[in-house]
Length: 296
Length: 324
Ligand code: SF4
Ligand code: SF4
Ligand code: FES
Image 1 (cartoon, rainbow over the protein chains, first blue to last red):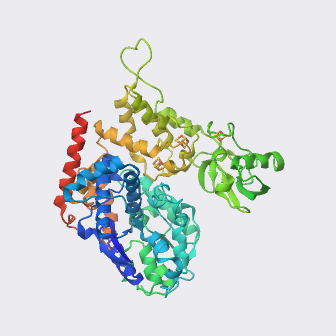
Image 2 (image 1 turned 135 degrees about the horizontal axis):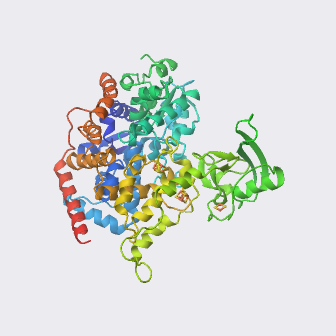
Image 3 (image 1 turned 180 degrees about the vertical axis):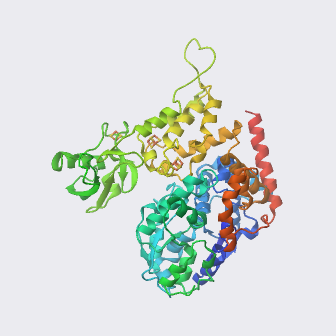
């Protein structure tokens, strides 16, 4: 199966380990990727641009959708925030033909036109909706037995649920748990899994942002999780990068590794730690690796 | 249908016992609401169960509580929507606000926040002879916010209020928007100035919890975003939030991508040395793990097209503004 692939800024920016890990895992799964970044697709706006200029954000995303339509390929994302922002933009564009026409008037400058058929989908959903859980299991050569993992979705993968079409695809609601179990891991049910990591207010109210990191990482730790797994690189930036500060602030030891979804897939598929870029995290992933007997 | 209702109980008079879960099994109609079930428990099984309700039709806003982990109106939630036959429903008091007993919380915080935004019209100048007139379109636009029934569901699940009671919070900020956007109100400047302070519109994480749980479609977060926009338009830009948004828009409009290296620097303000320094340990740790964005910020291929697109959008927006 072939996809128009939207990697997002952070998978090659603040989380440079995510992009190569994704490429390897998708290749193994037989998901062929045509990178929209190479075709000049822009940032989604991440919800920040939308605060200031919602219309410009919608024009940017419609442009990316039009590129995928031109290739006649389904659109694949690997970031909860990109996914959510795209889903919301898509809803506005599809719900209102006049609005779409207004957007298309600008895209015409480049000879592009969005017809309204794109369906941006995160790798997490694609695993369930295209690959299939049973098929996914057949790629597991190193079951993650005894590894206790807690899911952390990222706000934009769970809300607003109407834009994310949870009614149409009810399995999206616990997709992360489904995938983690398929890889053989023990899922730790965890109340913080759909809460906010605090990243969006990091430069605005760092104290509150770091408090969120402290709360969720320590809750997961106290529930016996060996790691948190996230489909969102922005959550990763905060939960991993600011965990040392969170430990300082909360005055306790937490030290729980944060694993990108593709890295977890890769480990179960037999890739080594280096191939998955696991040495690049701030919080060492060694504990996870020793638990599944992978050399660090 | 047969259900089990698992209720988080708490009795302040019994100082020895912390809160605990109690299960009740009962038979209810498919069409019953969670509130019907709780009332049935109270009337037929356990008279000591405390809950708050009145209208039973999603009007009074008394019965907000957490059902299966999320804030909802109990009277507006059908049992069959939250449990299968033979299944369990978890019912807890609303979050953020302190529990008085069982499912009843103390809403003082909620009302204090609402009062904090001066939720009344403050026109200036001479009073008109008859009523104040307002354009129909403005008032239909505001009808969505005015639909708020003050239930506190959004406050219960707000991710920032959970951390910091200083945040004005979703319901009160939506209320603030209701007055800032009312054409009859003349205190926009002072309202927006106050809302740009610590604890105001910029403290929201944009987590969408309030949008998701609001039973009336008020969409508090969208109102907060509209307030941010208005505050920036009105010139309240000397804060990290506004600088962050500005820098983000500039970066994406210029290169098509986010410049992760300079964004935090611009958000704090280039001259804010203490804040810049506080970033240093984090940056150094990241540097040692090679967990950093490329130093040279590259534009997307064909960035000229992106810039032309931005120009064309902005031209249209300027024309619109000029046309009023
Ligand atoms: S979007 Fe903002 S106001 Fe709404 S719940 Fe989240 S943090 Fe609170
Ligand atoms: S905004 Fe919605 S959830 Fe919040 S108090 Fe009003 S009606 Fe309730
Ligand atoms: S009882 Fe009035 S809103 Fe539920």
